[in-house]
Every structure is written in structure tokens, then in C-alpha cells.
Length: 114
Image (cartoon, rainbow, N blue to C red):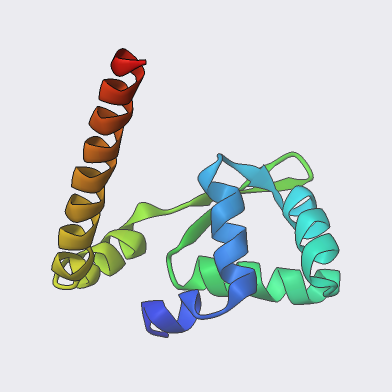
């Protein structure tokens, strides 16, 4: 499965967002995903399996718990692919930073005048 096929699903993206905060148990992940998406525990398990089978997440046993963590490799591949497109938004962000700095200077000057 291609990385964008894996990331194209909002449930899997949300699981990765949760895992970005650190390792979490399957029970913790399932609870959040069930509340937010209203899907069953087996459906959450299937999404975890897709992430694991495609290298986006790893799992380790700790007693009876299964702890999941993000694996950076596939995300680095996505980042490399996105690199060619960064120029489209980098210039706009630079322009925004310039405008914000200009506005800050003008506010500062106006405050000094009053």
C-alpha cells in the first residue's frame, strides 16, 4: 500500500496524531477513536494493523497491553516527496512574516506617538 493510501484515511491520520504525543496502548487509542469516529473496536484494530503492516507504527507487548508508537521512516518518505512542493507555500509564509513584522512596527510606532 502506498503511503498516501495509508494516510488518506482520517482515522489512520488521527491515530498517528495521537501517537505523535508518545507511545499509547491499544485501549487508549481505541477509546479516543471510538468517541471521535463512532467505529467499533475491531475497526480500530484493523486501522492499527494497516499502520503497523505499512511501517507507520510499531507495537510492543507490555504484559497484557499492546503499546503502539510512531515509526518515522514512512513519514520521512512522505516529507521527501512533499519537499518539491514547499516552494509553493514557503514564499507565501515569508510574505506573511513580512506583513506581520510591518504591522508590529506600525503598532509600536503608534504606541510611542500616543
